Amino acid sequence: MASRANEPSPIRFGAVVFLASELLLFGGLFAAYFTLRAETAEWPPAGVVLDTRLSGVATIVLILSSFTFIAGLRALARGASSRFVRWTVLTLVLGVVFLSIQLYDWTHVDFEISSHAYGTMYFSLTGLHGLHVAAGIVLMIVILGRHAQGAYRDRTIDGPEAVGYYWHFVDVVWIGLFATIFVLR
Image (tube, rainbow, N blue to C red; front, side, top):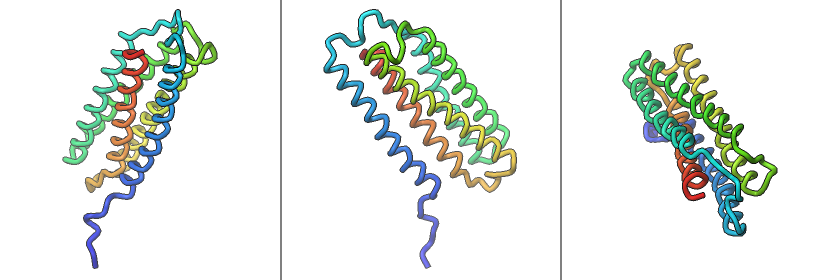
């Protein structure tokens, strides 16, 4: 009988397949953004002012959160339960800080989703990404709850690792969004 030791974890495999579909979703939105940018005479429209510095801070916060999540996963793999909780809570807090900055930014731009194509793309891209950050925060709460119930004591951490894949994906997408919306403009 063949050993199952070399088989991929179903939850991690499922996470990768799910993230592939998410890549297609964001890829389509990026394609729409660049198509509109190429077809529009003035992009972004006159009068659009974005707070690049504040979004840069948000970017640093989100990138830092990937490193804190990695630290949490490493602690969990070593059986350092309390360190896992601390690092994961810190990651969760950084995610909330990122979302708070985004909410502030959304409420302080001088245009709306219906103002022009740029507004539609700006709010669609950053809004969808914000929903993904919120989902990541919920997933962290779930793994913390499962941990409190005694899960992962055997150091089988496929679920938290799958959440890690998701969180890193969300971070990488934001780096692309930040570069596209705030740097390239």
